[in-house]
Image 1 (cartoon, rainbow, N blue to C red):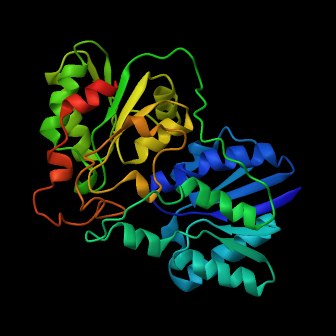
Image 2 (cartoon, rainbow, N blue to C red):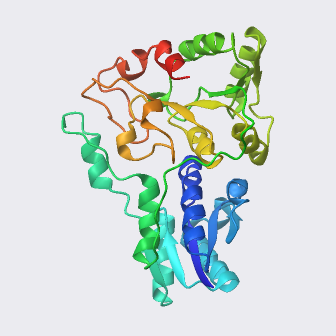
Image 3 (tube, rainbow, N blue to C red):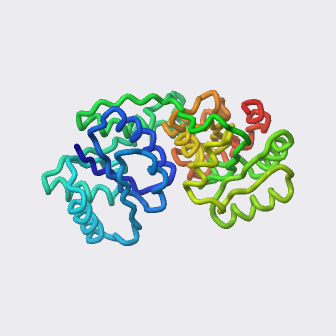
Length: 321
């Protein structure tokens, strides 16, 4: 059995995108085992993949160079891997890489395509095109080790019994989020014919969605009420999920649920569309030459009017449902 030690510590959505890659890679290479090191609250993402051992950590327990060195030693003693897969390429993971290279291990790391992405998000660049999907970038790390990986980019529904619509109106940054009054109107219209389940996290989001639940009949807020595994289970039972360019789109992909995704200052061209999700289910304003101006949606609006989100009509989303 070949053992690969893989790590990615960051954002929930980025870690979630490794899941379908691991699943298909391990099906095609059954004599491989992956040790996935990430934040401990992400464990449920990987629970149903055979040959993945999840090693959850609290990153605050391993601060600074000495903390990372201690983590490197612990992982080495516990797992004795054949290969290292750095799926993150940030300071913390670069230190781990250096330690493992010194110990004679073969380290392979993700090529994030930083220059291509900088070019893509340059508002003066009018020649924008689709970059490599992030899931393929993850798969490339294993290909460089010498393994064959062919990703299907197909959804795998966990159940055929599906009902209700999921709606996740929030995102980490303003540049990714439909104005809340539009989301409220959308929920009202959808709830006339369907049960709508709200997804979110964090105190403010929970408070907003509780209010919506009281104001709109036929809706239910699940924000803050489910564990991650319960949330995945619920999303798997939905007919469709409506999400911003955020983690909920990737959770829908993991459980094989179709997702209508709303994009503002970000763009599927950067490679972050959910695994197996259709480009036909993307809602965006196509004729804004300044889009995308950001990979993560964390920049202020170049024009100052957030046209990429303000110009999206609720009807565009309803038509896709």
